[in-house]
Image (cartoon, rainbow, N blue to C red; front, side, top):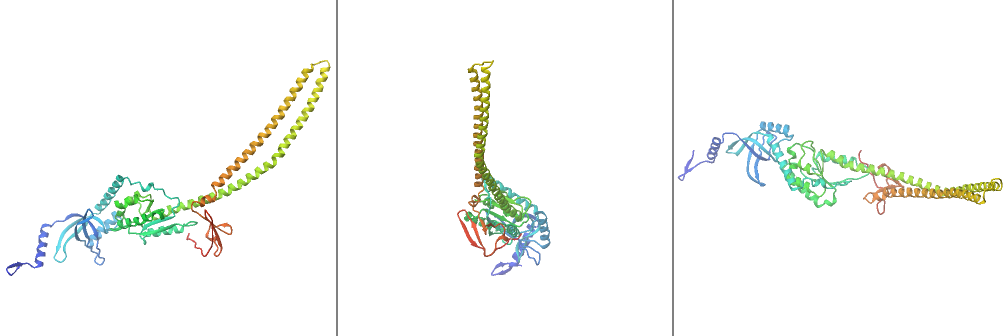
Length: 465
């Protein structure tokens, strides 16, 4: 009851607060469905109760906030529903649809007593944000922009955004290091949270840092170790997806889930389901190049042997050609001599006939002799032309084959490969292909595009298989 002090009616604090409690319980006796962002869950493991901070934002500013109460049994039930439907427990930074009643306590003030949480609202809210982000990116014309970037044939320098203790990052490291045989992959970690209220801002900050050093990297990889739909909400954020889509070099992702691609994965140049698959994709490019290089080295060796064989064959033809020509001339001389003998015999016979009973005119005999002589001269001339033409044709064919072989050698010349930034190391004149060939203390000669580096092996380190 109020008391009188100096003619004033005075209430105690408890009386005032009890009056407020009675008024609120009469006015707000029902339960209400309320939507709000759970900024922080505030879970107490000892009791199992939660006292979440609930708030509402408008244009990035908090316009309303209140403390909630979530008793242990209600929390356990709601958490199980989230795990079943969203594959993610109740966590900070998500929007909730809650069945609440208004409670006021003189000691603890005004709170919202949470009686139930609808996980389908949270799932729908995530999908709505995702679709809004997709629509905005397409309207700006940047949705496919990062995919248009040229992916390097050998991406040797990676900037990685991940949590340093992430299992996905550990898997990526293990796979890439175990498969580095004959080449080296350099990567730098830019640590960042990948879920929660601060995740988007941290990832944007890391992308900004990488952008300042973009000339030192070939790719950006965003790696995460898996999780449910709520944990992936950061990757549907418009600011993050826009930064990935407009990034100046290709961005690849492996964030560890197999369903419902996030917007960040959609706009990235290349997406892998898991960090392990992302590592396989990167290493496959190196291994295919290495296999192709080995194949070309074998082709160069084969071509060199072929050229040497052609050179020996051309030299053999060059040596044999004069002998063959002289033999043809000798044969034709014999034919000419035989023809001359036959011509003389025929002439004598015709002369005898002319002086005999036939008495052919002398002019007819002369004409016949000239015809026979011209016929055999034509035969001899044809044989000579054929010898010359066949010899020239054979020389041209062998010269063309030799020129073609020389061009093939030039195309497969290892110096052309060295111009692309690669090197070859030799020990005692032999190409180093495996770590077992390298002997400590021995000198090695590393051939570059413009010269050779001579160094001594101090130690070796073999990568795990």
